[in-house]
Image 1 (cartoon, rainbow, N blue to C red):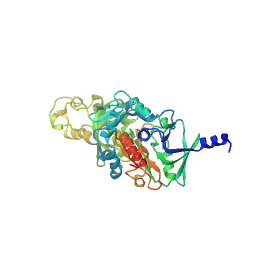
Image 2 (image 1 turned 135 degrees about the vertical axis):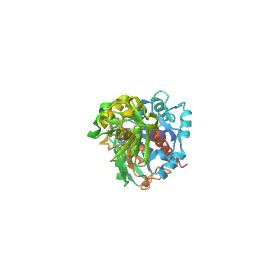
Image 3 (image 1 turned 30 degrees about the vertical axis):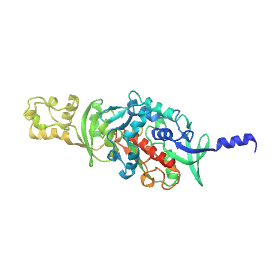
Image 4 (image 1 turned 60 degrees about the horizontal axis):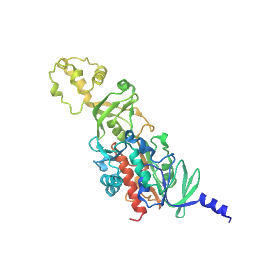
Length: 392
């Protein structure tokens, strides 16, 4: 065979030790842990870490001081081994050795000090000796014998190990796609129904007055089934948002939710008060007056309210309504659902169906609450994958 033919053959069928599909948090952690020149990252964007850059308002909520399976919508038995093998303390230690010292905000949440670029820079240095293919879309993954064939729109790669760390469907504007699910289904894996999560709610006609309160916020307690989500609620021009609402969306599929707009408020403390209702309730006056209007109540001294009117007012402790839907994948922090964890080994992240095929991070049916849990899962699952690939 001529030299030119040999070179063409080599370029179209590169033999790689480990192929990682995706260039986000989980993929970058795995590539950082693996030996130099042992991995090829395939990323559809022009830069690695696209979702890291925009998360947490550009400051990236890396992890949380309160960690455990109870903060995840997932099979506890599946999540526990990875969280135990590489927990939040291990992550913070790993980052500190690379001179990144996250700061605590909101009591337990760890953020980059100034910008998410700090974390991206750490990973950029760590993966500089791995091969990174940018602006490259994976078209298919097949397997023959012990070798996988990964086809992109530019080339064909082969490897004994393929790690699908392609994330979910959230933020399509930064390259999110279904490729991870497509690969999983090709190899016979089940996909748990996906949906936008950590996302705001749209509202029914009865709650259209919420939109007129756009920009106002208050602390609430939301009950959905047996789950309680507490924190700030933000009225938005599309409906409802804010941390408490985003957490609630993780557990909501359809049906009603209950909002306590006055958590920890004691009605006894205002009994007989001569002050106006709008001045007594611990809500922004704009919100109180909007609810008074909806409840058909006059803003008058509290002591003048009839028992029936007080009952109406106390309904703010258990305001029940059914969201119309969510803001969708374009606004969702993450995607819930994904590759069924029943078909993936909890200790190694390797497929139980196909030797050498791994799934890590958001592509799996594991979704954390707001507060750094999804990044921790991305890193922890990558660590479990790394340990198995390296035979440790």
